[in-house]
Image (cartoon, rainbow, N blue to C red; front, top):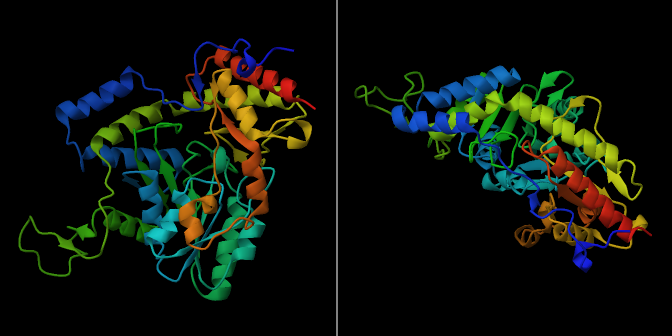
Length: 403
């Protein structure tokens, strides 16, 4: 048995390998440079071009680019009419923004539990948490795997029909650009779908986000809310324009606009999405092959309806088979220069949410998952050698702590 680096042994690799990293090539650099040389820096043609590209990619009728994935979620909740007194159902296994977007609107986040095998929000749990105050469901495509969209849409539609109040399905697709559900692209199915272009995501703009929808009515609201609630559209103006310069604020929005610099980078990155997808799938397949052979580990299951472009690879330990907990495994891998992360701390564990009255015990499946998971390196630029180093390190650590 190899001696762990944490105990004085030789690390599996000399340099650190992190859980995620952007890939930027000369085409990306040139795309940004062209904007800096010739184009408008913001509110220019690259925004329209990006929105058109996202529609072409997904099949959605409309896309609204914005400043971040968080802004996209906030815009979606506002467009859905979420306000004080409403409830928004979401998963606790997500970044805080998936729940914070409800708080931004004065609403109350309600946490539904997850499927313990896929780690996505459980439609059955969503249905159990529906109430007369439910205005929206924010369902997160965790790791990139599509949620059970048909079931969730049916729950929202049937509950809305019974209650007489529209319940919107907002798909948080921060992880899932490129994923398909029953042959249809994520972004074209839910009432609204949000994307994130943070650097660790499959496609990056440095920052940035987007909301996609098939509803013209929602689209008009999203565009208005993205830019302070201000419009120049003649059919929306409430007064006679004073001249060509005239505009009006007809609602309360935010400055959630994206720059053309970001848009140009994202457009260039979208050109590489097919190769990004292919490489991520190759890495996931190799990880699955290796880790399915280790009974001390549980490999995330995928529903057959989801053709997944994975953003994260989650390794789940079986504590009953190991003499170490997740923290010890995490630290041992770090000593081998495999730098993992954990996605995510359940949202209602955070002190801010505790002060709002949330407490442990709300979602037992999610809480158990949190104690047993870590995120392994997964990104396009990983070499086959990098992938084998990760597998070697995991095997080394598991064998050391095997009961």
